Structure formats: C-alpha cells, structure tokens
Length: 192
Image 1: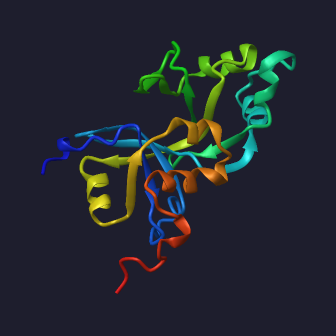
Image 2: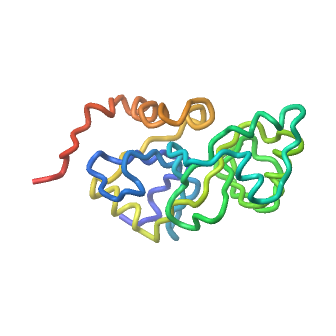
C-alpha cells in the first residue's frame, strides 16, 4: 500500500490510551493536511494558560472593546503541537481571504498570517476560531506507520466538535463518532 492511497485531511486523530508521548497523550488532533509529503495537524483539546487578550497584547494588536471583538478576549489559546511553538495558527470558519491560509475543507482554513488577528480584533471576524501555538507534523509515511501501530484512531472530523464544544468535551465527542466511549478503552492496550 502506498502512502498516497490514504488521505486523512479533515479527520480527527484520537490518541489511544497507550500513547506515551506527553505531547499527544489524551489529545484530539485535527488533520489540516495529509499527502505523500507527510501530515500537519493541530491539537484541539489542550488549552494553555493564556487567553486571547494576552496573546493580542504580546503581538501588539489592540482589541477594540466595543462590539463583537471584545468576546474573543477570554477565549483560551491552545497547545497545537510540538512544532514551531512560538508561532500562532488560527483554525477558522468561514474560510475568508487571508494572506497565508491553508484551505482544509470547504469552509475551514488554517491561517498563520497576522491579518486574521487584526480582523478579529477590529471586526470580530471570523466568528468561529481556535488559536494554537505550534502544530503537529509528521514526515512522509510516519503517520501511516503510527496508525498501523495502533497509536491513533481516526474518524472524519465534525467541525461542530471543534467550534461548538468546550475543550474537555471534544475528545469524548469524537470518540462517540466512532461509537466508542473513551473510558472503555484499555490503558494497557498493546502491552504484553
């Protein structure tokens, strides 16, 4: 089977309980790109101790307190993965027109350019967002190998889980897409 026969873009990666890498234990990762060159995703259920007010302050973008922009301030920033943890990435819906956006799905994009933050601060757009520091990356064939080793379960993503549920409910909700209760997965799966 060649790596090109599987494309998991717009899928969730559900870390199996036996996942020992602390970066990924108990995580739900949204795959933004997957091709024969590798894969790129962001962890969507691991908020860090920073809110958007603090992030906007760090990058010198004033949030206009009036109107819709003010509602972003107390949203958490997330640990998106162990690669480029000093860079911000905005997963958003709708797609919009930004300087540096990877189109993930029909109306979902991953943007790494400052203009989207400026729009959020001034106009409150786009409305559905998740901001991470860093991302998760896999080299060619690496993700397929990890899946074959039972490190991950995969299921087609439901954007409502990312944009509509609090972070602690996202992993169990993704498991429900598979008809599996996370609590019923054995912590010792795969160990002799």
